[in-house]
Length: 204
Image (cartoon, rainbow, N blue to C red; front, side, top):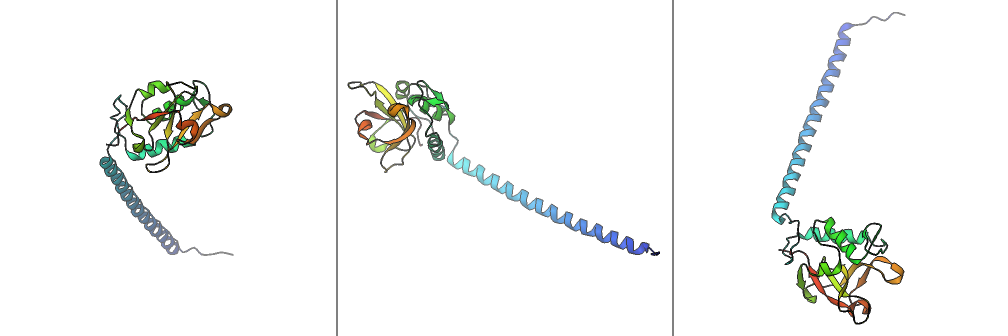
C-alpha cells in the first residue's frame, strides 16, 4: 500500500511544533525572571534586617562589653540543649565528653564567643549579674562540692528566659558521671553552692 506524502502538510506540522516550543520557551523565561526578582527581594530584606539588628562582635572582654543579637543567644541555648546526654569526662572539651567548663567553653566558642576553659578562668571574665537580672545565655557559677570549699568549682548556662524559674544546662559529674543535663537553680544541691552569674556579652 502506497501513501502519498504531502510536503505542505509536513511543513505545516513542523511550523506548529516550532511555534509551540517557542511558546514554552517564552513562558520558561518569564518564570525565571519572576523567580529571580523574588530571590533578589528576599536577599534585600535579609540584608536590611541584618543592618537593623547589627553585626555581633567576635570576642569577649573582661568587662563583658560584647554586642550580641538576641537571635544568637537563642541559637546558642538551642544548640547547648542538643548536647544533653553527652557523657561527663574529666577535662573534656569535645563531643566525646565534657567537664563543666569544657562544656561552656565548647558551646560559647562555637558561637564565636571566646572564653577559656576552666570555671575559675571563666568567672574572671564578663559582667557580674544580679540574680533578678539573670537571662538566657548567662553563666551560673558554683562553689566546689566539698563542704567548706569557697572556690569556683562548677559552671552552667542559663536556658530559661527572664521571669521564669531559673534553669541551667551543664555537664555534671554527679550520679555516676551523668554528663550534660538540666537542673533548676532552686535545687538544694545547687542553691547552697551558688556564687553568682556572669554575662559574657552585652545586649546593647
